[in-house]
Length: 140
Image (cartoon, rainbow, N blue to C red):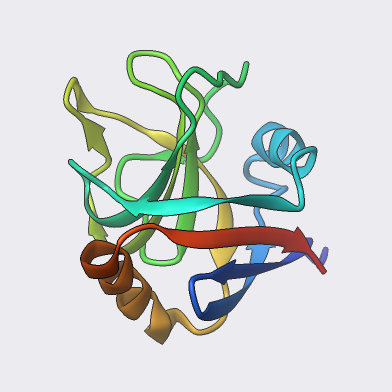
């Protein structure tokens, strides 16, 4: 069995282990790995439910759908590569139905958090009530 590449995600005061889903989303993982270590601010989603996101504005990734979903599970991170809505990264911490003001979207699931899943809800509530939090994704 092939070992998936390991990541460390620091979000606010929380640290999570994670894995890249290279077998299921190889092009998305390759595109994102070029950006590691990746640092940005997490803000709370507007339309999708219990998730935090990173709006990437006019950024556009020339990617096809791979391992895409509109309903990421808690601990799954998806990349919406742009199109009918702005490019973004979303991390589900609870129930998510990925959408924008234009309607339902789907994003490529490329990272899965593998530790401290019980801390995801606290991260989401921190972002909701206290505002944007720093996030860093790095290879380990």
